[in-house]
Each structure stands twice: as structure tokens, then as C-alpha cells.
Length: 455
RNA sequence: GAGGUUGUAGCUCAGUCGGUUAGAGCGUCAGUUUGUGGCACUGAAGGCCGUGGGUUCGAGACCCAUCAUCCUCCCCA
Figure 1 (cartoon, rainbow, N blue to C red):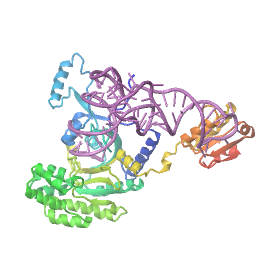
Figure 2: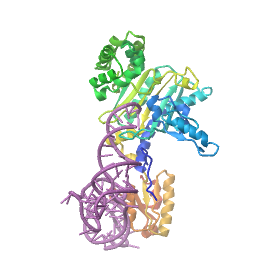
Figure 3: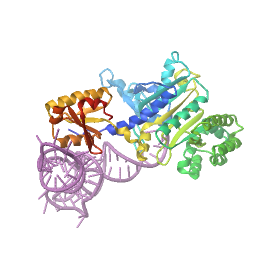
Figure 4: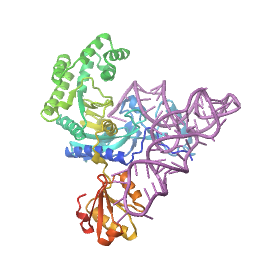
């Protein structure tokens, strides 16, 4: 028998890890609900045609495809061979694969909205917490199966939605005790840059290159722009754009100088000013930072874009999102604008772990262990245990009547704080012993008072 | 898709220049100890040295391949 193993980039989660992950999930879900979002779940797999072409060329390559069944059946075998040749030639063929694992939660959501737009009440606010899969090579903070927690609003152009989503980000990370920067930008400003640099058609090349500024530095960005066919004069304009620094106010002022007299630039700056004006009145004003180099890869964004960076730790973005004006248009339902954000739970977990920010009480499981000290003794213990459970106290009884040593060690291993002991003496006297393991202290009380004990 | 790292006991890791029966700590189990855990002591179990080839009188060690791991790039959460 070969040793069992896991597929690359996937993981099992043991009890302490699941508890810590649930702490993150619950925090995010509670805030989503607090802001009036409703849950949605969609299938793990989608039709390949739903996903292809939505994430750019790189994205398409990272979609996990599912092989069709029955490829080798006698009646299919010729078709399968042709399909396989097509795939080898770089084309997709539905005779070989027509389903794939979901790559993110936004496109399945757009598909859902497009399918159900007649039934939904707009603006429609949904949240979704489910795993996604990417055929990426695993490395730090990168997995092939990971969870996203998304909140999106469709059917509203109001920037108030951006304000709400920004507050959701700030509230969640505040509750998690994690210090973050909420970086914002507008795709419109990036479009304006491409315009004034005289290369509206080069917008993707420009944004991909400048997005790397904080990683590789100005000189390398210039080099990359040059290799992407951007002229020297254009690069000069771009580096002027990249040199914008200072407070949010200073950045806006500089941006007005540079792109403010183009239509896109003006609109983009107004969006950002609107958002910052709102946020600065609340408690999280200092969390939001303008970053004009922020681009984000997904090509359906059209307005404000977000990215979350954890401070004091080396990790890629732990969340991101933005506005898309016509997401469902891809599925035949035009004119439904939307805006959404996403939390990367697995990266948030890694960051909280590295900074030791998980609260100790996350790990509480069983509260009380009843010792098993004989047949009659354990019957009484069982009865009392059931009473405690009706009070909502989680408890368990050691299933075997073994020596104290073993039962104590079991309690220790599971971090069970209390032990209740009923031996022959206590059974006789209708008492029980409660021992607090951490302190090594114990008290004897009547069995009738156990349900009232403050565990 | 490109490059690098590491795979030895359940876990963390030693293992010299290629040499005879592969080690330690922790953990597990048993005992000292059948009415009180954490400590101590004694003992035991546990290994296809990732997998498959090759070189050699001889391979855990060297070579090739392969799989997995972690990391970097690309891209992203």
C-alpha cells in the first residue's frame, strides 16, 4: 500500500486550526450580516464557458479543469481523440472538458445574478464564504485550495456602497486586532494616466508595470515599461505620476495637476474624494491610504479599487476588490453595475499566526471531563453530565474506567479546564469533586449543586 | 510555465571521506504508582533513509529520473 498523500497545495485542518479559522470566518460573517448582506452559496464547479476569458490570459491558465466522464466509451473514442488533439494545439474542446472548479466567487455571483435578475430585489447585497481553486504553484501565502469571503452589491452606482465596503474592511480587521492599510485607487485615474501618456491602448501594459513599484522600484518599472513598448516621453509622464507622494490630501492635489483636466482623471479624483470625505468622519479615517500605483489584475474593474496590506509582516494582499460597471453584461444582462470586496482567509490566518494575534479563548472545547471510576460511579457521572449539557456546558465522560493518571492526562492534552470526580466515597455521600486543573485546586460539593456551579 | 531548497522514527532533526547492526530529543506505550495529573527514574515499541533506476566489492550519503515540500519569478488572495 502506497503512503497516502494530499494533492499539491491542499491541506487538512486539525481541530486547533479549524477553531482559529472559524474565528476568522465568524468575525467576517457577523460584520457582513451587520451591514445587511445576505448569504449565497454556489457549486464548486461551473461550466468552463462561464469562467473562461474572465480573468485574463494568466487567469485562464490557472483554472482547474475537470475531465469529462466516458471519454473512453466506444461511441466517444474518436471524438475524444480529436478533442485531445485540439487541446494539445492550445484550443479548448468541450468534448474533453466542459466543467471547471470555481476560480473566484465574483464570476459565479455574476452568473447567478444574470440567471436570476428577474427575481432579485435590487440593490442586491450578498456575501459568500466558500473555497476557490487555482492551478498555481504553491508558495508562501499561496495555496491551490483557499477560501474567499466576498461581499458584493449589484444594481447601484452609488459610491455609498464603496463607503460601506470600506467600513466593513476596517471593522473586520479592527475586530481581528490586525493593523492594516486599506489602499485605494480608481481605474479611471489609471485610464487618465494612459491617456495623457498618449497610450490609451497601452493601459494594461502600463498598469501591470506600475503595480510593481513598491516591489521592484522606480528604475525597474521604467525598464519594464520600455520593454513593453512605451516611449521615453511616455515613461517620463508616468514617472511623474509615480513620484506623487505625501498625505492623501497632497496626493489628490498633485493628481489634480497631472490628470485632473481629463474627463477620466476628474471623475476618478471625485470618487476618491467622496470616499475619503465620508471615511474621515468615522473612526477609521487613518486606515485608508491612496495608492495611485495600485492597479489589480482583474480586468473587469472600472472605478474605485481596493487592496488590503497587513502591516509589520511580509505577505501579499490579504483582501481586494473594486467596482465593475457591467459584470453581468458578460452573461447577457447589461446595465447592472456592482462593487465588491474579498477577504483572503488563508492569508489572514497566516498573518494572525505570525503576529500571534489569535485570542486564547478561541481554543476552548470541552469544559468539563467526568472521570470514570467504576460502573455505578460512571452511571451517576453520566446522569450529572447530561444535566450540565442542558445548561449548555460542553462536557464528556472518559469512556473507560482506568487509573487516574490516564484520565488526568487526557484532560490535559485536550486543554479541558475542569474535572469532575465521583468515586465510591462520593457516590456513597452524594457528593462530587470539582478540580480546576490549572490551579490544582479542588472542592467537594453535593451532586445536586453541580448544575449551579459556575464553570 | 521558469529557477532554487529540502525529503532519515508519530514530530523536530543528527548521521564525518561511501564502510559492517541507522542515532538523539520530544511524543507514544508499559512500570515505579488501582483515590489525584504536571516532576523524576526504569524499560519497550516504532525505519523500504520519499519512489524508481544507475555507479560501486559496498549507497542514507554519489549520479540520473520521478514524486512531494518550502521558497523566488510570473500572477494573485
